[in-house]
Image 1 (spheres, helix red, strand yellow):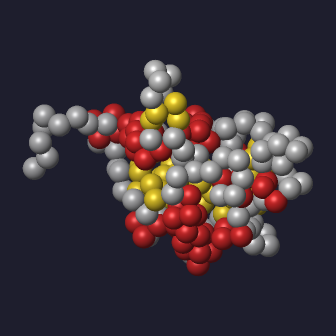
Image 2: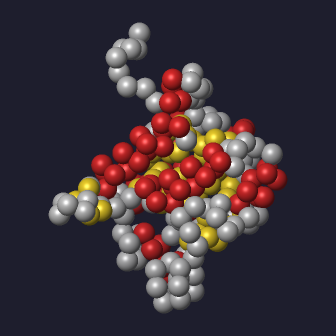
Length: 201
């Protein structure tokens, strides 16, 4: 039996079903899988492994005929995420196929100023499988907003990554710690966290 003295998430307290979403009920959203995070000015810790996991998710979504939406951040010309430069392109490992939706965004929240909600409504699916970059930024902002829009998300731990950040006190929060803490925070109310692509049935 679970230890009743251990902390619980709000979802656990509510008796929510914490089973990761399945392909038959979900849309895959890959957020900002762009070269900027691999070879550009914003390198992420563990990005290669996370991209490989994103590729597994994409292959599984295609094999199961699940809708796929690629989110692509758009930066300023000459700067980070410049769409007219290789740095702003989607990584080859998860390049969109013909017929897959690509949505550009200018803010961390993929719903803000975009038609993402309209595309999701058209799928008639209420669950999202979310992966990409960065865990503490665009993944978090999008998953939190998804709940406000009536969707419930499953975030794939191994298919997300972030970077070290200053802690404001002269120290550093390591990327692995920031990634873990953000996923824990999201799991309290906003999503189910699944370990990897293999957890999605």
